[in-house]
Length: 307
Ligand code: AMP
Image 1 (spheres, rainbow, N blue to C red):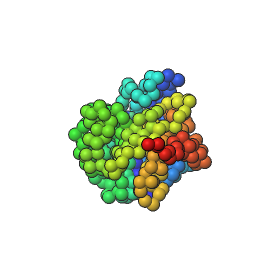
Image 2: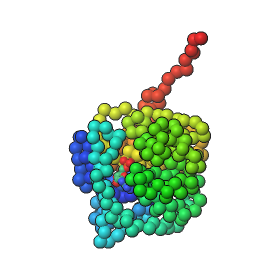
Image 3: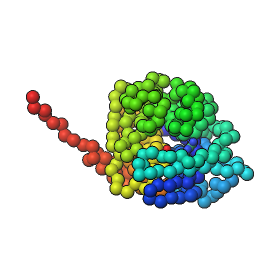
Image 4: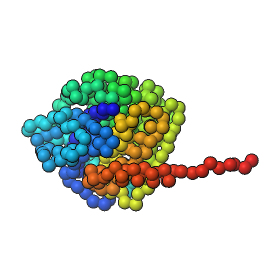
């Protein structure tokens, strides 16, 4: 199945307790497409400035990623995000967001990008996400990501969008922020009530909860001793999750669950180094090895309870 992603391609400045980088490659669409390309061909729609050169574009080379939908704007700068993490790596503190080229971006989907089987509306302005959705034809699955920045500044736009999509990925704190519910299950139900089939709640080092068909599927994150930079974990998760689904014929409950594990696997590799330094270098055998490790991690036998 084909997959199109629309979202940010960016430069990030990141500080974690373990170090910092000033101008690293980032962006939701960047992380997503590299992760998804381990499973399926991907097409990106996005925008960069003049400062995003051939060196930066190399991250997409040698992978099944179509970049013809990345527009380059002369005389303008690429989207920039500055984030900081304390010892609680689950919480990103946004210090600066410079929309730059995104401020005037009006995505135009060409023939290649229209009518994908799966459309991923990565984290950008919900009005732009809606605009893309209008142009996209009739994808089998439309998935949406967002963040606190948009929940705070554009909630009505987000709500309109949520009535027209199938699946949403959102992190735990954002569930509470969006719904005003302290309890995650109540918050998830409030979000599902917009008409979504599936909700994936990302909980950082605690893993993921998937709500689908009145069932909850819960997985831990892969236990890692060295977590350097959680930036992009959510987009990488989405790339593995939707990339795996796109590589399958049907989206059954079993496939959705396997997709959650593949998403968790690629996200676990991503956080082991800054930017895409690790994500860009993994292999299928490594992905499959960690997938099997997840089975061992979560396996337990049936147990006859004595009366
Ligand atoms: P994640 O850690 O998966 O939530 O996403 C991190 C990526 O999101 C970074 O590489 C940023 O460039 C990008 N990002 C941060 N803020 C925004 C925003 N307001 N709109 C679009 N992308 C953003």
